Image 1 (cartoon, helix red, strand yellow):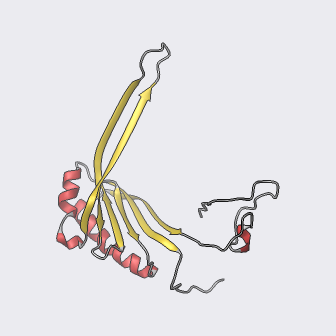
Image 2: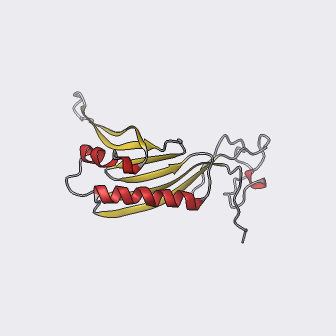
Image 3: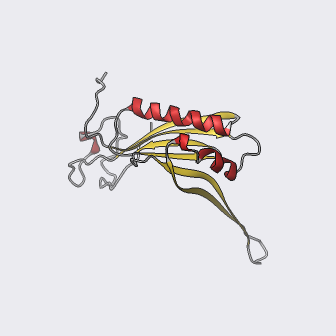
Length: 174
């Protein structure tokens, strides 16, 4: 097994912890805003988070389609004063992102625990429905056109030699 070590120039563009919840009954955007805008949170409100939906229904008789559209404010995006952390406090959950330069996992966990304690104390969610982490890496590999990623990264899907080998980007999920 590989030895874990801290990389001083880690390729991590963003590391995040996401917790989705079932909100308490009756929680509104105004209630969230009043609860999270408190100084104890230690972040400033950058902007609100909105969600929009659009729908349409086609008719078989050729008449004009029926459309619907809705939008609502569902959360707040907050930034730490040094702009290294971004917190999203939503009616449906909480996300904390660490922006470059990435430090160490214990630092992200410590800050997430602190903010999660404020979120849960003030918003009283009914239950946690999902917990996830994500690391977004930006690898600047010295590759020539058509060269295989296998030279630098292990455990990739094998691309058949007959398939096009030019790749502008790729996404891999574990």
